[in-house]
Image (tube, rainbow, N blue to C red):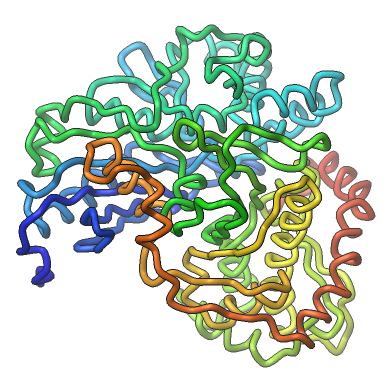
Length: 513
């Protein structure tokens, strides 16, 4: 049934958030009121070990479907514009006609691990990270491009242009191949100081700027939809389309985390901690990223590969008897166990890892397992491991000179009281939760409102987003996790030789007969 608020007069902007496992379209008023929401999912496929790809056509269909549903609910005439968010670091090879020649290579794809380690160890590796803001890691499109140049030269020669998923969706919707400074700053190919393509990075990738989308600000407005896209979405062809930004920086907007010292924490499939700053900066040790948001605003922080995906793995591997949607029962199991999981630690690097070390070597590991441990200990240790990894990111941000005085959190995990409690306990600080808003989708809508003149600035986010709940850490449990953190942190270096040896043996160790 249509929400009765949708009948009210006034414009709305639809924020379209192209995520790792689903696309969400959400209609917001300039006052921050959500009027309609639609979601459509798609799989993350693993065609070979270390490869994590998606079908870009399925994602495009999800975009069209969700926008059509939301437009029908609020009324197409009320839609003042669309504005986009997308997961960072995706890569897609396109033909001269704009058709995909590769699958969509996602941030989680680890095929370029050897190239990343080689580039990181090179004399200019850290300088490249500090100049572009993007860590030299298999997630980086630059490193993926080096892999394609070395491993798939024939395919590389056929690719007329390389883009990410948002760029291709906008090409199909509006007929123009453009990329915003936010997404571009997460490719490893953009020089932060000039907001132009970096000559050394282009040379490493073996391509020129003519094979990349045209660079535009995040507030750039495309003139409208193609006739085909208008028909598919039910919107007028003249509907403005705001290019938007990447999902991480936009999550800060969506949470109102735009003032100094206010960090946004998100846990979806992966996870991240970020703060907004007024100038681009990467710490001397290269432990944080730096991505563009809007002119004069940058987002600095760290991302982890393994968030909600760890709970999904636990359901499949540890509790197949609980059915297809075991999340609540898994969380109930974990809640039976005290903080510290009886001395059991899990390094949750199921998809490799990113911050703060930015190396692809880690794998998942349980350490401290005894005969006394049961399934509930394994599940809780997995959840605690995700939070401990985020705590390492928080520590690295503070050590890099970034003050963090408040943390606001969002993501699917935020619906769970146990996740909320764990995050506060492990990070050892209060965590605030905003009511209802999907962070990146609301951030995209706010950016669209600024671009279309419906709000004066994205700074209104700080006032539009209210805090529904604040969870304080339990002193005893926080002390337990703080005592375990050095042990957890030490696992990364202690196990690195074993992880490297296992990686070298991977081709001889298949998962199945």
